[in-house]
Image 1 (spheres, rainbow, N blue to C red):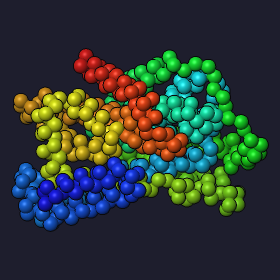
Image 2 (cartoon, one colour):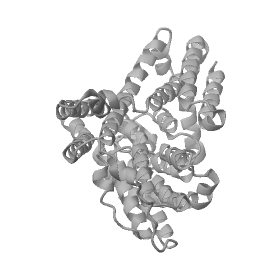
Image 3 (cartoon, rainbow, N blue to C red):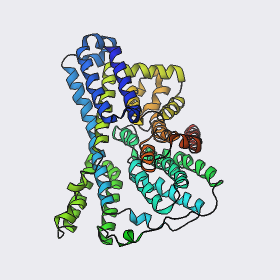
Length: 457
């Protein structure tokens, strides 16, 4: 059963990676993989548990396997409720066209200037939204700014790099960084101060290279009369109010966690509750047809529920391997073969350009448990190695950077890239030829910057 669990997970992982050729949604593959892995663990408990350490075996034996499942589900639920709250807030801002506050202010037609403006806006926006939503917003913006599709692809490629780089250094900007933050591997202040400069370098390197080849001005698409006459769904006051409150609610979450010591999902639910009340009040005089798309009830139908189910499935599947002891063996193998945390993380980052970074980070969190100060004090010869796995340890910080930015190397390697590919129908080979090397140079440069800062400090 031990080997069969690993084979089931690998097969499920392949189905997730080959989602588009198979035409089977990755959420379905993840959920089935999770259920089958936990079922195999239950049926093979007698043969699997003796193979792992006695502490894990005693807690997971017999009826304890159901207890382990409930324990893991509790941790996973914190991530899922946080994501659902954040996605609802972002969709509510978008329904009110709140992002026009930013996009309407871009006036330049110069190619290089537009490249830098779009990249910097994406980088900053991704740190308070998520990289997927930011990419969707910026690609929609670029359609209004750049007429030629092939030329627009270069800007979209930079948007993918910028969105992933911007999300890596913020506790609410990328789902993998959020997982590490909610899991108490990093703090909000620690991750911001440690990863901001490497993330900036990750974006600046491809920007500088691309800027040397782009000259002249872009041609903007012509605006039709029907677009000009289309009635806005909200007033400027409503649009600005929801935008300010929505961004404020997202930024407030780390502050709420620091002050109250409650989990982040409580902070995001508080922000959602405030926005819910405010939108109900400002739209109370409208008829149902106009009010419904602008309400939280209407917006809830637009959030990406399949992504939430995917996270549930893959995190449950990874937790089954953690309970059975597979991930402990993998952690030992990585330490013996690669030798240090920098090499391990760079490898994880490059691997995330081929497969989804969520299960990679989830696996790493289970492979390398959080080390407390008490455990470090009695670690003896392993103290130097274990110190990398404390709160804000080198391993966790670099994992956030590598898993967040490594996916930019291939267009299928991140949610931002997949969204851009679908919206603009970007060819995989075109991205590989034109953008992948730029993304790789940025990724390695940022990683080298973090290593240099970490070594010198």
